[in-house]
Each structure stands twice: as C-alpha cells, then as structure tokens.
Length: 450
Image (cartoon, rainbow, N blue to C red; front, side):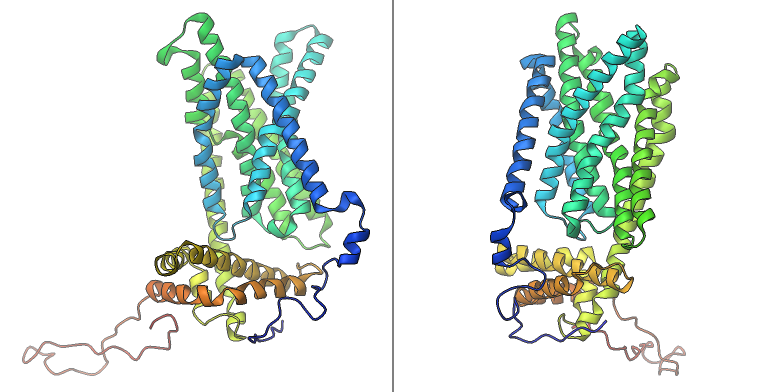
C-alpha cells in the first residue's frame, strides 16, 4: 500500500475546496430536509427529552417525591465509577463524548421507558389471561423483562453502529457503547427500586441495616452495579466482532450481534430467576456465573486493548518511513505509559491546550493505524483514501506540538540497551590489579534513545 510522502504545503482540501467523497454545497442545498444534520440531531434530542420527562413522571408517581430524591441520590453513586471504567478501556482510541452521552441518555430515558411500559403491559396481559398474578410476575421477571430490556438497550448499540460507523471499529468500541448504555438504564432502574424500598420503610418503620432500603442498596449498588452492563456488553461484543468482518461476510455481520443479544437475554433471565433456585439461589448464581463471567470479560477487554496497542506499533512505522511521523512515534503511540508522559510533558511546557492537542494527535494516529490494518486485511470501506488523507492532515497540523512531547516520552520509556561483558580477558580479572570493568557491547541503532 503506497503512502505519499508529506510536504509542508500539504493541503487540507484538494483544489476546488471540496474533499473527495464529501457532499458539495449544491448537494446539501438540494438534500431533503430530513437528511440535514441539524434536523436529525433535533429529532433525536427531542425524542430523548420527551422520554426523560415521561420516565421522570412515572418513577416519581411510583416512588413519591421523597422516595425519588433518596433513590436518585443513592443510584448516582456507582455511575461515575462505571463511566470512568469504560472510559479507561477506551483510552487507546477514545470515541467522542457525544456518543457516550447519547448512549447514557438512551439507556436512562428511552430504553427505561420502553422497558417499563412493555413489561407492565405484558405482565398484566399474562395475569388476565391466566388468572394467576403471582406466576405472571415470575414469568414477567424471568422471560419478558430480559427480552424487552436487552432489545431496548441493544437499540442504542445498533444506532451507533449504523450512524457512527467511523467510531465503531472493534470489540472495545462495542463494549464501551453497550456498557455506557446499560449504565444509564441501571441508573433509572435503581432510582425506581431504591425509591420504592424507601417508601416501604416509611410505611413499616424500617430503619438502619435491617431496612428494605439498606438491603436493596447492598444488592443493587454494592454487590451488582455491573449486572446490567455485563449483560449488554455481550451484545456489544457481538457488534464489535461484526465491525471487524469484511463487507462480503454478511452471515458473520448479522449472526454475531444476534448471538450476543441472545446470550445477554439468557444471562439476564438467569440473574432475574435466581430467586427461584431456593433461599441461596441469588448467591449461588452470583458466585457460580456472574463473578467468573465478569472476570472473563474483564480479561478479554484488557487483552483486546493490548492487541490494539500492538496494532498501532505494527502499522504506523510505514508512515514514519514515508516521513509523516518521526521514527520514535510508532513506539510512543503504542504505549499507554508513553502517551500519558507525552501529555504531561506538553501540559508542563505549553499548557493544557497543548496537552489536549497531543491527546487528539494520539487519537488520530491510532485511528490511522486501525484504518491501515483494516485496509491490509481487505476490510476498508470505499472511502479509505479519503479517510486516510483526513487523518494524515490532522496529524500534520499538530506535529509541531505533538512531536517534541512524543519524542521525550519515547526517550523516557525506551528499554535500556543491555551492557554485555567483552569476550576477551580484562586486566585485573584474575585477582590482582584493578577489578574487572566490562566494556559495553556496541549497541545497535536505537532511535528511542537520545
């Protein structure tokens, strides 16, 4: 794959002012009104806002104002930790914040509203048809709720996969999108459960550790804050594997998301039905399934992250040879420690804006490495050349700020050159004179050391 060398007059757009593949001004003027970006953003924002207001009214009606406020305060506690964890996983190629905000809002508002309405309707219908409310509640919790809730959450993953395809390139992207969506859903659900528990304690006089609120808080916030994210992450992994498939692999692109969704439903159903396994059924399912699967998925995403760093180190040297990057940048960009040191160096010497520019440079370089990796494997889209030039242009405009920081980080984190004793005898080596002093072996050229 040929890479043209850079030059200082490299244009951000080709002659004529239009980027190849981008819509022209005339095309935008003649586009239908529903195809305009502001219309789509406006419609989506309105939908989420209406969903939020409706779900707010429903939850407040169920819990009361005081219960709602208590539930809101307690349900907020795990949210920053979960978001930070998913953001940490996404540090190799961080996606835009607007995607995460959309996912959280969808989970907290739209998905929660769909789940409440659909679950209530289905449970009431089953109770009326069977004249057995208790079995209807059990069936609703173990069968209806997992199907409805996982489909509602998977809708956000599907929307990002379809309409933000550039930001959805692999398994980690699927994990982050699905996890943040499920975090939003669990946030609203926890408000409902904790607020209802508080209302029960108000009626029965329960206080302290023996209260229903304390028990609900322990189970949902302390023991299983990761439950909903864990279920939906299986769907996200399916979409991530689909994103890695070539366009012609239609069966794989459809089968893996559906398989992930079915696994999420199955695990969700097992979790909801754990109470049917006896007095200690919850703890048995928690210890035998939830914890091991959580550990397995944690290992998978960390392994995937390390694999992505290896991809960066393998793909970027081609651009260094062509002159787009300095010789040490592929090494620095393939190390999370070196990236962090580069941002700290830029902040210390040029301020926060320079550190942000270095962070953007790192993100664009990572996207470039993944793009080239997909291209070599025949999975790049028709806009490969256009996208490559866009990313190279972004890097070239930030090189004066980023290169000194990355060069410094590469020198700091480069492995030391080993010192080897010479093969010939040294004076003093046999017990007299000065102690032997090994001569360093002539080192191979190492561009990462000053």
